[in-house]
Every structure is written in C-alpha cells, then in structure tokens.
Image 1: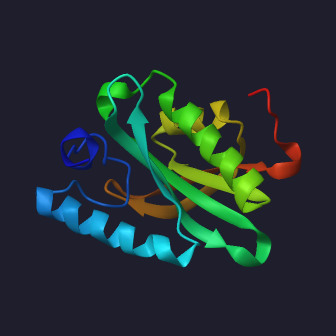
Image 2 (image 1 turned 180 degrees about the vertical axis):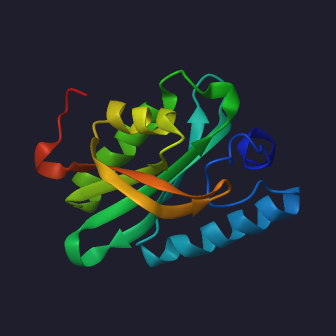
Amino acid sequence: MFSNWASDPEVTRFLTWPPHTSIEVTENLLTDWISRYEDGGYFNWVMEYKETGKAIGNISVVKLYEDIDAADVGYCMSRKYWGQGLMSEALKGVMDYLFDVVGLNRVAANHDVNNPRSGRVMDKAGMVQEGILRQAGKNNQGIHDVVWHAAIRDEKSDNL
C-alpha cells in the first residue's frame, strides 16, 4: 500500500488525506482498519491485481447512513493501473455487494470537479451524476466544487 499508492502525491492529489510520509503511517492506518472490522458496519477492501497478487488500491465505505440504507464510498489506486478499467470493475463489484449482500438502497460517491476521470469511473460502474455542490468539499487542492454520483438498487443494471 505504501509504495503502490499511499505515498504518491499524484494519487492523493484530489483526496482528503495527504500522501503517507513513512511506512509507519501506513502500518498504523492498516492497524486501525483491521480493528474496525469487528463491528460489522465497516467496509474497506484492498484491490488485488489478479495477475500478480499485488495490492494496487482500495475502496471503502466512508460514510454509512443506516437509517436510509445508504453509503458514500471512496477509492484510490496506484497510478500504474490507471486507465485500464480496473477501478470501474472493482467499484461495480463493491456496489453489487453493498446492494445484494448488505441490503443497501443507495450507493453514492463524489469527486472534485477538477478530477473528471474519477467521475468517468463512477459512470462506468453504473452511477448517475446527480449534481454539483459549489464549494462544498476540501481536499489536498483546497476548497472545491463537488460532483455527486449515485446508484439506486432498483435501478441497478446487471448488464453494466
């Protein structure tokens, strides 16, 4: 994780957390993640590249709204694997799991308006753009407009 994506300033450019400065930062984060799995409401997946078995990214539920059966997800991946459709494939799999196994009704994600490639990932995974919230987010680039995308279980297409 540290060497493949978490320490890369280009990967974290539009994220809300800074690049990891040491392997210890990554190790501490992983320890925290592992401790959260026991509660049953924590969802965080590592993406593994099938051909090598190497960890290349992650997708997680960043906010769970149990009262409305909804979740916001976030993701990041090693630059080496960008543009190959891998993140859209992984996001679609996570969405299917959240709909079919967890029983959620809505899965949403957002991106900085200046990072349209992330929006294309969401579109390819079957999400629909819902709108732009002006100056509603803050990431490593500062305050920015946020583009929201979402999928609803009843509108889910198994053909995507």
